[in-house]
Length: 401
Image 1: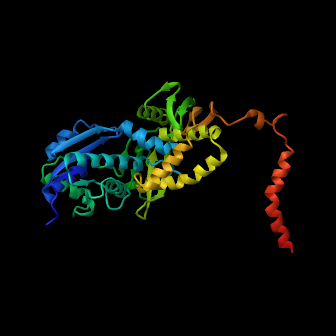
Image 2: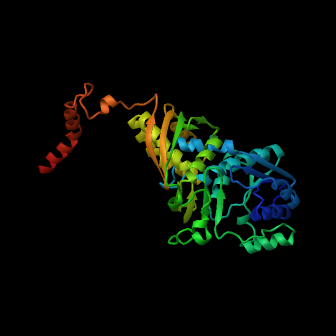
Image 3: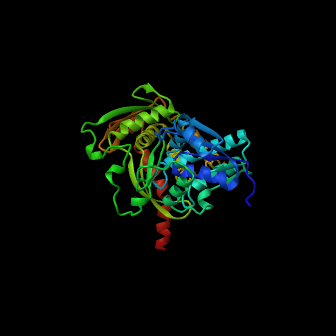
């Protein structure tokens, strides 16, 4: 007999997996299930969620629009840090999980629930991201991870379970890969993508056109930043979610933001993933350009040395850890003067920096010029070079002895 659970908050999408989980939780634990669905820009119809969850047996249903919170409090902080896991992945799924898990915990407190549950499998990163967040925010919460407990092992098992209990099952064939989408990106994993030698089929992509079919005329956009955050596009101020959505559309129609990577999962295995992050790709390039004229050299170099560690923490699921809080403060401190405008060219799968300007610019044309100037004595470089060469000279002289 399992320990008694009265209420559990389930991260619920309305798909086959979480519908089966909802019913399985009720049967296995004889408990009430509170279904929670977060709208973070997955572009799915969520109107059917309350009715479907109720029909499946949910006691209460929450459907919440968290797009602005997602971009403002999770995506933009990561953009301020130029986060990039293993040099390629812009962390779209990784950034969404702590938001969903945090809201689950808040609902559990409000509803007096004693457990939370998710639909992540026992092989992937998401189980870690969900559960580290649960435990960081509510140390005594019970966690139920059905994929680590039940005897169901395949899609056909899930469909048989659903049919036996009158749960509607998909009438269209499953895609030969799994996807996860939010306002920052869409990911594709598994199935036909498990062979790292095989190219992804063109009909897989959702957010971007093939670069070779993108417009033959480039598009010029200006992105304004304030303290490291993008705030306007072509002079129009937009909310965080609206801005990211707008740049997604601009970049997607030019075929920007596709990456195909084999990454190292936190649980220890390698995994092949294909990602589309059109807006994020452009905003990161523009942000780096904005920093190039507003950040001190040593600040840039120190901050850049921390990007791999910051990105690991996000990827691994340590968003609500003390080390993450410390790193975020460091990243944000570096951004206080990162304000201005960057001009970008979008063309055939690439984005190029055309110009940057800022009232806080550290760039001085009178110092940098190759023409005659009166502010820099070139002879000063001789002593600078000889001082920096001193240890090299001593080492060589001692070696000769």
